[in-house]
Figure 1: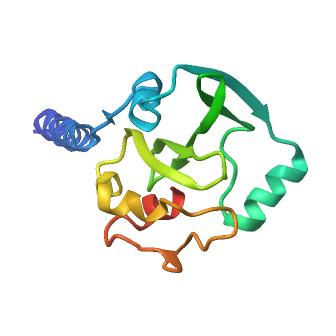
Figure 2: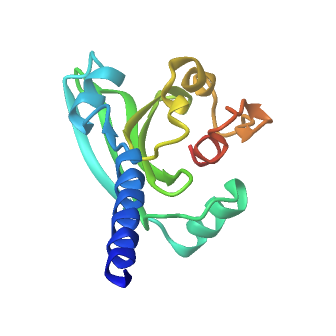
Length: 166
C-alpha cells in the first residue's frame, strides 16, 4: 500500500510539473536582424555598438524608472542611409512576471520613439504587450514625455508587470 501511495504521489508531482512547464511559452517574434528591417527598412548600413553603464547611470535609470538595471550595459545599432544617420535601435530586456522580455526601441535622430517591437516573450501571461495598439502609444515620445504606467502609458489588465517593465 505504501508503494502505491509513493507511486501515486510521484505521478501527481510529474503531472503538475509537466502542466507548469507546458504553460511556459517562449516565443521569438523577431531576431535582431529582422528588427533592423522592420524598424528601419531604408537603412543600408548598421553600426553596432555597446555601452557599459557607469554606477551613476545605473542609479539615474533606477531613480527615473524605478526599475533595476538587469544588464550592466546596452547594445545598440546606429542606422544609416547614404552615410546619414536615420535612427538608432536600442536592444534591452526587462522582467515580466517571472521571465525576461527582450525588446527593441527604434529612435529617430531627434530622440523620439519611432517604434517598439517585442523580440522574445517568455511569459505565459501578459502577451498582450505585443499588440500593435499598445506598443504604438510610445511612438513620438521623447525623454521629456510621460512614460509612466497609467500616466502616459496605458496598462493592460493581466499584463501589468510586463507593461511596467517595457
